[in-house]
Length: 102
Image 1 (cartoon, rainbow, N blue to C red):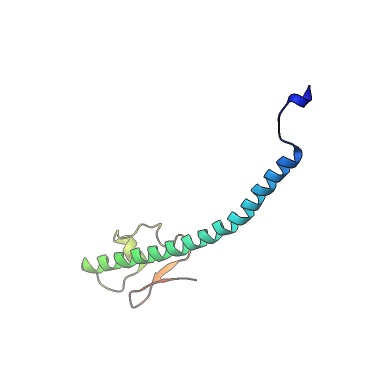
Image 2: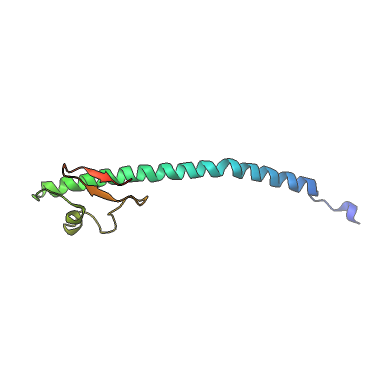
């Protein structure tokens, strides 16, 4: 009665699990590296956006020195945008350049 039933053997199932495990070991480090790259590029884009808001702040007749708090108060930045997406704090130096903390 059992000879007519079709199914996978234990060896076949173990081979499938081995293949899946190998694929996971290959892809997980790549995903981690891409996540770090995304955070880095996200911070670069954020810095460029803040630099644009500094220029808009100056064009509207506001004076130097520009601070992050002045941009938030003036409505040029939201309060939640005081740091990069990866958590690094941003500040504006005396030359008006956006600097990230390491």
